[in-house]
Length: 177
Image (cartoon, rainbow, N blue to C red):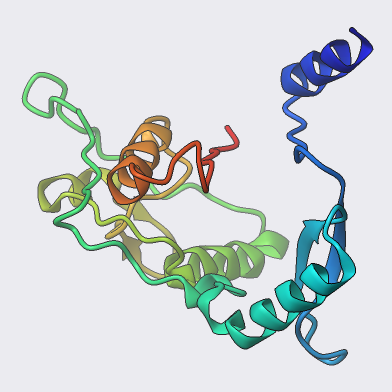
């Protein structure tokens, strides 16, 4: 009964845990570590083979955001269900920012635009709906920005399309809201 209570508490607090205890291993180098977690219940020979296997195939993992290519638009596209005829967009003036924050804002905007991780293409007709203006340029998202309210559903749809035969068996898909 105590185990069920602990599991319920973790679930309510969004603390996902593995079924069995795990240990962290480094399959990279000391200069460039690449850490993964494996189960502690493996027998020594099995553990050794598992680590050798992971080292041999470490290029299949995305270690950095730049390693994750975009998704083909034929699989999934993100739409913004906005009725611009009934509710036309309003032109907003450029907002003044504190001078000490301007460079940090610029760096963050450029970083997010250039990040290119797990890109789900925006529907062409909806790109204009994501336009925002800065002191330096006018931007619009070409790919789905994760700050929008309905992106979780789009991401879930993409993952179900890609991994439908593996879900709840080999993989779990989780979006932290």
